[in-house]
Image 1 (cartoon, helix red, strand yellow):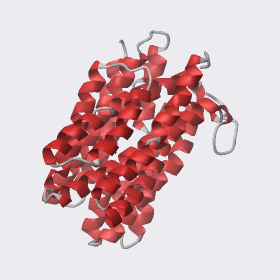
Image 2 (cartoon, rainbow, N blue to C red):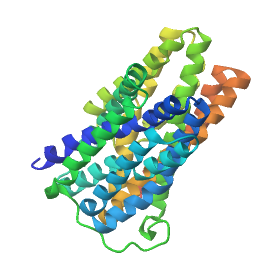
Image 3 (spheres, one colour):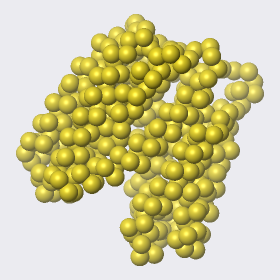
Length: 373
């Protein structure tokens, strides 16, 4: 598609940097302050600020256009990241919040451009599959690179690379003017554009909240399982198996509904609670985690169908905030279950939380069966 490669490649670089930033903030603060508590607080402030402020930045982008807004927020992002390296004491927590608040919503920017470029061609699901595969890849490779750099060079090395990737990628993205969506103009409503306050979008918000539950709890459950089997170092191998399968599945399948894959995630968490050993867990999670793309892709396509182009970037950032909220809720709940009752209870708790996903998917299927958008 003419014009696609011009924005896709820089967006991929920027997304790689964004995937590294959260963990890079942790390493930077821990290395400069020597405190895991302060580093955890800074990482939490980064995530909360990103989830709360991100939709408002997305709303401004929809109103004024990517070229007018994104360079300004990205410059603030870079300056805040530099300031974080030099921030003393608890000031680092506040600076980390600024980093999170100004982190460019690269996925939303790219998706809006795909929508602008592919409107009416019927190939949007292919583009969303490509985006989902890229997302899996960046979150597989990014944290590994951050850890390697920050542990072997200097604690802020991972942050320096992440910021460089974000800045360079965003510069390439925003100068690709041909694929940039037109500004949407005025945005009615106080915190949320009123055009998003409808049943279809709220169902999607709930579905992504449930998907966030899965993302937030699965790492805790897998790590607890690995430690209980004296194989803590293999926790990353187990989760990577699911990510690799998900990427492969995302490249070859075009699901119309997230319902079957949502059932797989929920039932799979129940089955993983009975895993007898490491080989069974690796194979089991490869199958369960492999269903993630089959949820993400139809949810992304559905979002494009039920939201106007003028509010699409804001819609994407609210969806990202839903996933972040789910992650923040599920991680401590699953952790408490593991601490009190063992790792199988963690997977069962996660199954109960993730059950919201197929339930929300049922409402989406019901809308489609009655001919609603």
